[in-house]
Length: 383
Figure 1 (cartoon, helix red, strand yellow):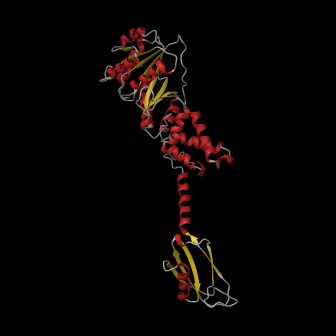
Figure 2 (cartoon, rainbow, N blue to C red; figure 1 turned 90 degrees about the vertical axis):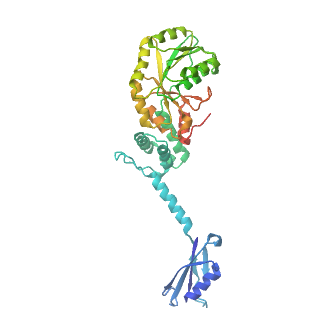
Figure 3 (cartoon, rainbow, N blue to C red; figure 1 turned 60 degrees about the vertical axis):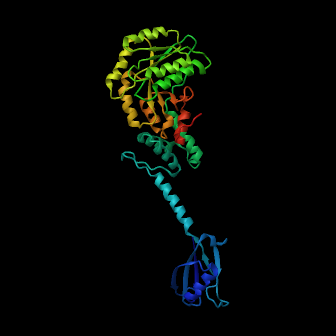
């Protein structure tokens, strides 16, 4: 909506000029007397009207003779059209930027104002539920280190944050074994996180997808969960891989001996609540029976739980001397800051990401670029 001002010796003259210029649809906003507005000293009246945008003229300035009977000394009075709607929208945009730029931490220790050029990135950190202490550190470091010349370039700002994130994500790169090497990998973690499915994906990957024709064997210690053994048997039958079922700690040594010709041996364990210390200790009993063998322990964690829950799980499973991390269910969340924060705080490298239930396809080898893309886009990016 636009505002126009018209002057006349009487309110009627001013109103008539407004109607002639703007039509009958013009809305009268105000009428007021203005004294000595011209050189002849006559009292003048101003009528302010509002018109809709479709009546807006191409030129925003209008020249009007204020007195109906013009004299040679009369000077044209210019009125300015103000687009209040556009101004209000600009103000709203500025307010939104200010609101996005305010650091509102839970702890008053972190007193920091986010510059406007970092506002969109700060929002991504917040929406991804990134650890607040780490957010503060990264923002402060970026504000200090990013050259002023780059701050006005959104892409450069984005790339700089990606670089910092890449530095804080610990990654364990996949290194295939040589012909006569052997590796034993034990998957541990809570119930329902996808240990068995992840083992099946890894078994298929090493047995068939790397072009090396590695010999792969699987051992299951999970005799508690209904259907656990049947699930693994179904996968191993399809892939034609040996499966050993171990129900007591003393049986693990013999099972591994029977699989001595395998390059990769994956051990599936019974899932349990992170608070069920007895079941976690039972896994330790199995380990003690074969402690002369190097066994790599990987903690399998779901991506769709909050940071504090991940820390609780790790706290109780760390009694198993965890070596690495694998994250599952990345397709079931839109928040990835918890994964980055957790891996950085525990200093445990990530080995794989599981992004669905399809065996063997829904498995991603650990890659910081992949996780950062998920973080930036707030969704799992399938390759």
